[in-house]
Length: 632
Image (cartoon, rainbow, N blue to C red; front, side, top):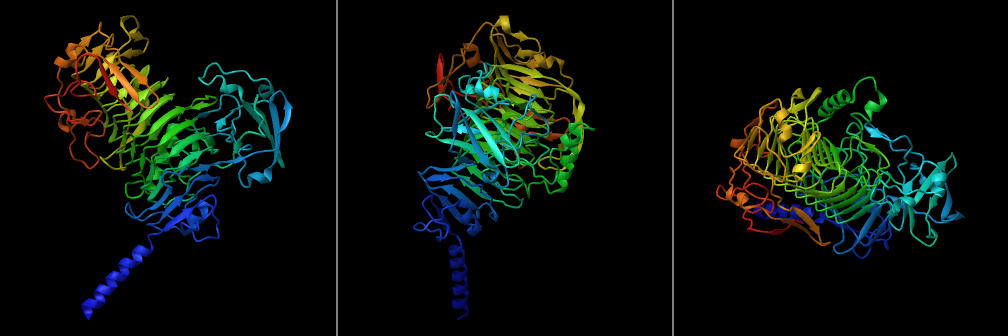
């Protein structure tokens, strides 16, 4: 009898867990008084939010949902999440905008609409301007709102005259698009928007304006283990995400742990697409509020406040951001101040970041992270941005691997005031400037680098470094320059006539001015790229051009190259933790996040690299003569 009672108890517990693993459905044709079942779905995602508990799934069907999803609960663990997903095979759009009709024609393509401020409820983006630490408004106001014509954003102007008589911006790629303009004025009662739609009648087209700060953001910390999968996010009036501020992108984690953001299309954010960032309580634009001390001192103070607010692996970070398409954001595709620690960012396609260039600032890139401790950034395609990747402050234990970067007009990779150790391996860096580093303690291994490399010290800023694989600060130091490792890379210049451009040089010549020791071995220098005097076992083939070229067929990206016989004859060392040693300042080794030793035994494609086939560059076992590789 006791055994039967025990078995019934176990069965009851099992059945309880099954009961509480529920799926709620949302449909544009639903009703919020329904029960959320597949045959009686809710109409809004926010209604489903109220019912979802750990282990539950919210499935959203085709339609456009104009709402801010503010989850009130998270999951309990990686295996007991709350999952938000678009129904398989269906397009579920979450927009931070509303449709605007009732436009009145003013003259020659210019239309006007007057909107009561009550329409915006608690937030009016046409009364709020983009603002924050390290933001440069370039002498004018930029509102957080935007105007969209058939899904394409127009260009805000600071005067009505520039809407009535638009002039194309010849400094950007979208010159023709830049003549589609708008201007706004707002008083206590109404907001008026003028827009130049040219040949389009806005009352017959889809015209939307941004009305919400974000699309998916919990307004409090402690909402962990959420999955967001398969949605189309767009048109939020996001604010500048400074590292010293609350960072709210179109999707934002708000100082939580264990989110998975995957398979989404994220576009047309005023500032940032995804933020894995800091919350407000530890400081919000503190430098703008107090200019009496330098911004770097403010950020050090913020860092210590964040540590007191449980910034550690148990409470913050460990996110996965993968397989997303992110574009048309004017600050970053993905950013995060300290909240990206222990995270994996992989297989994302990020492009057209900072394309309008109407404002600028020190936080703009395809991916911009502060304190990406033990983070992995791999297999991302990033192009047509200002900067591709920007790792700023406290990049320690970070691995930047197998990324494809090109057409970024500032540089592909910027490393600012970090002490290492960090590892940059198996990347394809094809922009005019490949690497700028104001850091030390880096290991650059098996990369293909066709742009310039620039390195310099920073003797005036003290920045933190940690005990290995933690967020516990071990000390602060300035940047001396050097203490870097370059093994088995291929550098390609632009020929002898252009091999030196003031401070920007092809190859490793720039490192001749480094103060700390260097380790360089097994590198190949083509077409005017030159080695550093510390380099060993290198090949310099100044007169040979391997013809590196990227071809975009629309569906795929192909890399064309043609190395000489010297490449095939040259062998490099297999790169290991033992070979790389320890970064000088933190006294920490190049190893996996769990502390185990690493070995760079796979190439860009995941093919096995051994002692026998360990050649320079990101590929092994290449055929001779002209090679064409599908790299995306």
